[in-house]
Length: 162
Image 1 (cartoon, helix red, strand yellow):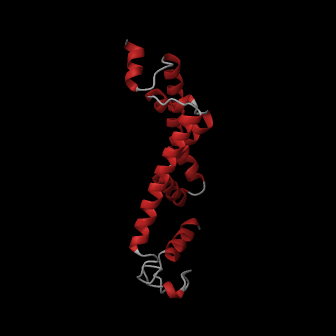
Image 2 (image 1 turned 120 degrees about the vertical axis):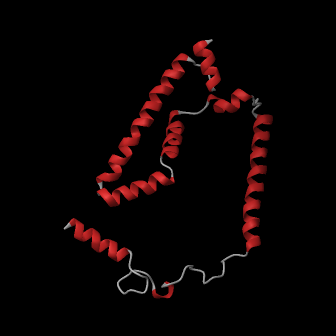
Image 3 (image 1 turned 30 degrees about the horizontal axis):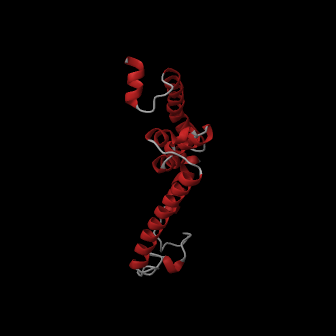
């Protein structure tokens, strides 16, 4: 039963666009673009948007840093930069680890595993990679215990071997 269902779904997904029974709208059958060959915006507007946003956020960030420096009397050093002012909490650290762990290829592969093995496929796919995250957490805790002030690998080597 499952093999026949899978073959039926594979045939339904891979039929030509002109074949009846597909979900494609007839006006898009056989076309490679939704815009009829003409882009929705001219090229100069794309460049203006990219450069404009880049300049805006650069100036905005510079102004925020300047205001923080003047009104909060924050001093920026290499230690402040490397440790984010020692103000990063556990939630942000966990979200960074998860976001770096689940990047585009992982999401696509978990969909592929779901297609091949069913609903439990992505669960087992993710559980195999969870071991790495747990080991990294244990390693990070041990490094922090042994070298509390270390920020770089060379500082950890200095703390360990002197």
